[in-house]
Length: 509
Length: 67
Image (tube, rainbow over all chains, first blue to last red; front, side):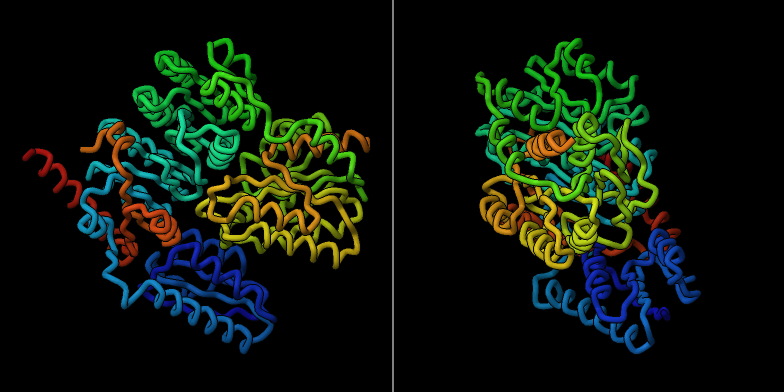
């Protein structure tokens, strides 16, 4: 294998565009690896780690585009680099000349839309704090999608925001719905009486989608970023958002979803929630629900339960899960496991976490790249063993590759590989619909399932949860049919998928 | 200055700084939005960018003082 490089000085493209082009190059015959990215410290480190670094890269800046291809010979590598440049040119042509003037700075954007009240920021982490500061200085709320923002910057920005009564949703916040507008990765929900605050992106998507499918609706869904309830950040945004929902006359019920907060933060949070004067459902993922009920709030046992309880409090009547236990049992009774192990390939981190927690009583040993208490750390995240529940959205898998909700390539490859393992009885996965996500993930996964069956000659059970609503651009019903046609058993919530797994594996054991 | 609860009663108007797909999603829903074809500040030169930030912060303080 040889490595060839190119540098395009002062040429900027966003990370998703570049990663998708990198994926295209990797598919070319003779190409071993490809990196297409901006000259950030992170990308330079990745190149060094992959043995694809060249001293030509010594002087690049984050404003320069770097391309590196590892291939069987120089002709293949050069062809791949030229293909990459062609793809980039086409990309520029799409958004470039001919279209009306596109500003290149936030200040320029503000001149075009002076009464904007929200800035969505998804630039590389090292520049994200700067853009947030500019937005806050101008009195605008921020959804901060970027990750790799330091906790010191987060604290400084959130202090600044609280002083101005402005939201900073993030950093690393993937989901928010403000006035029915889904921002970044979010679903099309119905309006209704339930307001949510969450330090978990997929958790927020699952609960808002389920609330809509249960017939109720949302006022606001405010993401705060995974670290907001840490001791250092002190829940600054959660407290501000909870107060805003308390003051909002449209919001009748409040839902809070987070990892268990730092002990010092819990007291202030509970005091704030008590003063709200509205019913509050709390789901601290993996925490003892008694600490919540003792404090006088409704404790949810899981994400689906959070949606059910919120709907009950909003509508005054008890609701049933979307899929009855009897139906789940019937589906479980209809399948046969050709092997004894489960392999679950998640794109949503909180869903992966939830599956691990709920399956510990059923499966003797669970391995994961993101193990919760009681599960075991998978030494090599790229190689499953035993019962394995993997979060493919974790940083390990997204270095130089777009998130699995956008780019199905690695998950498809992994699914085919798992199916060939004679020990594997079931392969489970999630399909996350909504804005931001792939336009046809069910189609991509169905194709992988067919390929897996054909290549392995085996028929493990394929089961999936579909997170989404009827209003989502992918069309929920169509996505369900696509998976069902490929022989995948589908479920309307992660909890119902987990119950199915429990029934199937308990029966076998 | 927009207060938090004004946000809940006014249409969301977005400046999207970064991923173009987020802008496309907003436009497809009829949300008022403007796309910023973001470029690293000062051509990626961190020292110059830091200097520009100091100037910007100073200008903001001066403006706030005048108000």
